[in-house]
Amino acid sequence: MATPRARALLIIEDDLPIRRALKNALGDVADRVLEAATGRAGIDLTATERPDLVVLDLGLPDIQGVAVCREIRTWSPVPIVVLSARHSDAEKVQVLNAGADDYVTKPFSTPEFVARVRAVLRRARLAAGENAATIVEAYGLTIDLARRRVERGGSLIRLTPIEWDILRTLVVHAGRTLTHQQIFDAVWGAAAGSPQQYLRVHITNLRRKIEAHADRPELVVTEPGVGYRAELPG
Ligand code: CA
Image 1 (cartoon, protein in one colour):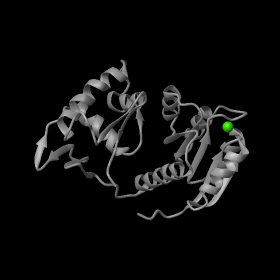
Image 2 (cartoon, rainbow, N blue to C red):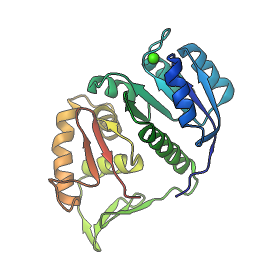
Image 3 (cartoon, helix red, strand yellow):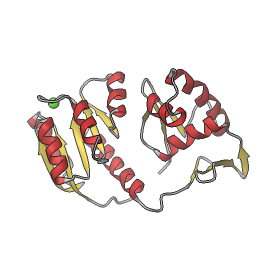
């Protein structure tokens, strides 16, 4: 599927060689690739230039990348892809909870990075589309989001309200990793408890009902140490 070019992207990264490499890599993705070397300059450019997507490095000289992400999120839904130097699950959880859409761990290959950026742009366009699909078909399942029904081969699969809410939350954000906390907040609202433990039990039950092979899930995928993601084919 050919993706239309974005109007403008913004790279917030203080390391000049990396910034230049990313800019070159994204030349085919957008008409303009803007650059900022500090968090403050990045926030300002996001406000004035309204890019279609922001690439944000977590290690910046003036403001922590996570704080930049949080600040942008208070006034803009622009997709944010985070570059993370360390392979730390806690950090991934922190940036996803701060509103980032995806993260890429350094060192990464250019094709992988570009593919992730394109995927995030594609999802953002789909989400902005007025007739977003309310019926999702994948892996032999038919998920009717409006009518709260899941079927396989014409037979209704009976989910508990919580299983349904977990499934809907993941499918609505398909392709995006949601942290345990994000899923917990969406499903249980303000309830207190241990998101990870609660979720593990319900995800296990949900998979038993909807996955063809519950031990090798295709739709509801685990992101170890971080959360879960609905993976739709194509
Ligand atoms: Ca840096």
